[in-house]
Image 1 (cartoon, protein in one colour):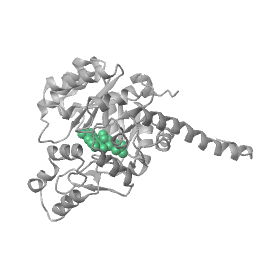
Image 2 (tube, helix red, strand yellow):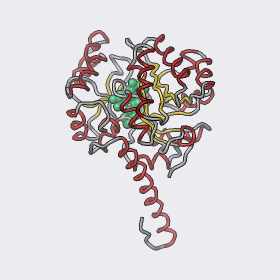
Image 3 (cartoon, protein in one colour):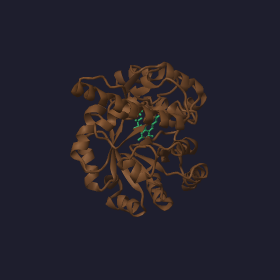
Image 4 (cartoon, protein in one colour):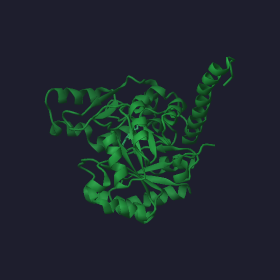
Length: 340
Ligand SMILES: Cc1cc2nc3c(=O)[nH]c(=O)nc-3n(C[C@H](O)[C@H](O)[C@H](O)COP(=O)(O)O)c2cc1C
């Protein structure tokens, strides 16, 4: 059994949270993570209307009685409008979901302090995903319940400072009183053990859940991710799109990079990065047809499991690796060898 600020706050068995994943964090995956003992994520950008979002929430609740959270991404988007984001926040409060992951702009800056207050009054625990210490300090001052501390290894959009998880986590832990959850580069028990040793109260994983049985990704892509390693992701988008992303190396991302290097902009790039294209490629298993936002930790993913198996294995191995590391000190002090 493990007890941290995160297990206590959300009433979950494991301090393991699924990160937002556009097109993929829908009710089945969200419920499977929560039912397996972690905190599942229903990513709001998948839903255009209030009815759609509410019926997705109902579907999660049909599949599990356990807590889950909503993910809202406050980044420039052609599809998700500020009105949609306001609707997501209102529905989260009305439905009294256990938690929210806010990424991109902080809520108070995007929609005013009252946006955060309304969620907190409804009992929703709100964490901001931040990639630098300054943003973590802002989140604490603004009244967030915790931070997801995002390192450069992460899939999706690592912050432009390019600071890795192992350096950033203790910086946040030292500076903040609110719980810090480490994000980026974590796919197994060793990495969870490291995050806990750095002072985190839990971990967030996204890429690790891509190869779970419940993830709505075509098997071609699951198999491709298993074959690839830690050197098979690339940072792109900083020049032509104005925001960097980490994706699987493939023909399409190479094409995007060539356009960026040639000075091309959004008009030329948009057809290659459109949401419909990405959704279609995940579903049909078109390995070379879209930018797949995955993290360096794909080098640690070797098999397809259920979400429950992933959660159990990662947490059990974390304990095993922490115990093993601890015996090194015992051996040193006592001069005898202790079995892990
Ligand atoms: C396929 C995929 C889609 C993602 N979509 C989003 C998103 O819509 N919003 C967001 O804030 N982060 C998104 N992310 C980032 C994750 O929530 C998380 O921060 C990151 O992947 C963690 O690093 P890891 O992949 O090493 O676990 C996505 C990640 C992946 C792998």
